[in-house]
Structure formats: structure tokens, C-alpha cells
Length: 260
Image (cartoon, rainbow, N blue to C red; front, side):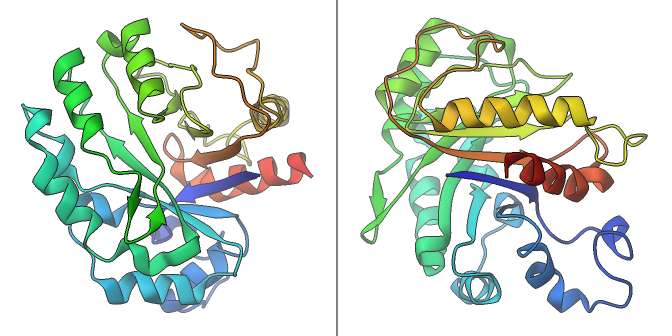
């Protein structure tokens, strides 16, 4: 299964462009969730959300819709990651299971200044549970310091079945290694001058990569530090995030169209 989406759904420049003119803000999630197949929840990164919010979001979206979400920053923005256990547990107990089957991967995003420390990062990964309240969890880590571009980090993520986020970014290193039974990519180089953010040729290239990942393979045009674990099929999650954010919905919809 390949899912393509955007980061969040509350963004003023989308109103009157992606969102029809006059659409009530209370219906923006309803509209967005019918244009893309997944949304990355960003609000969970900044503060704890209430169970009622997760229930409401689940109710407003189609039956086959899936959310991913950023984990709370208090778990990742710390000097000693091995001490993140209580923050991780608090976040996972905040009501995220109210999403039920619509709960997709959880994204643990680290500061660009955070450097790789094998022992400390390994301790952090060991805190990430496989389930919560009987619901299976999938974890992805977005690291943004060049020190993580090592086989040791790749092996550590593979050991814990945690996906390394593939970031298409001019600022951060791209680590394209497949380390889990799913793929998580964040495309961050949209161009405001291009109606779909990415040109049709680039959209087509990402669609081909997505299909290769889904089929259990590795795109030959992306750099990998180690061989990927064997797989028959994988779920793929691709999000249009930064760059020209106003183009994100159009970029996601263009990719979905190319994947048909």
C-alpha cells in the first residue's frame, strides 16, 4: 500500500486554493482527507493532545484513511536520549489509540544539531514499544545531522525495525537505507514556481521509487549504505512537507495521480 499526504491541514495559504473559498475551517480536515490518503499530524510535536481530539479526527476522515504523527518534542529534544522513557510513555498514553486502525507510523524527529551516539541512540530505540493498548505501533526516526550517515546507525535501526526517514532536503543528509517493514519519506524541495511543487518528471521518478519500495525492492538511483532486509511487500508513506508548503497539496495529488 502506498499512501501520499501532507503535513497538517491548518494552513492559511491553502484557503481559497486547496480549500474551496468559503469552506469552514472546521471542515478542512474533512476536505483534505478526501484529496490525499494520509496526513502527518504536527500538533502532537508541540503539545499533548486530548483523546477527544483523536476521536474527532478519526470520525471526520474516510474509513481507509491513515494518520501518521510527530511524537512530542520533549522525548527527542534532550541531551541524554536514554532518559526519554517517561516522556515516550506519556506521549503514547495521551490518547493516540483513539485513532484505532487509522493510526499509522509515529515520527520521532531530532534536532539538526543532535549527533549520533550509538549507545545513547540505541537506548532510545529500546524505549519504543511494539504495541500500546493492543494496537501495533510503527516507528520512524528523522535524524538531521551528517554523523548519522553510517552503517552502524543503519544496523541499529534495522535491529529495532525502525524506519529511517528518507528526507529529500537541501539542508539535511539523505539516508535511503530500508531498515523496517515500511518506508517513510518526507519530500521537502517543492518549488513555488511549479504548480505541482515538483515537476512532472520528478513526480514520475518518485512514483517509480514508491512502487519499487512497495514491491520489496530498493530504488537503484538512491544511495544506500547497506543492503536492505528482504521483503515481499512494504507499506510506503510519502509526505509533501516543506519547501514551498503552499504547493504541498498539489504535489501530493499529482503523485497520487501518477501512482494510479
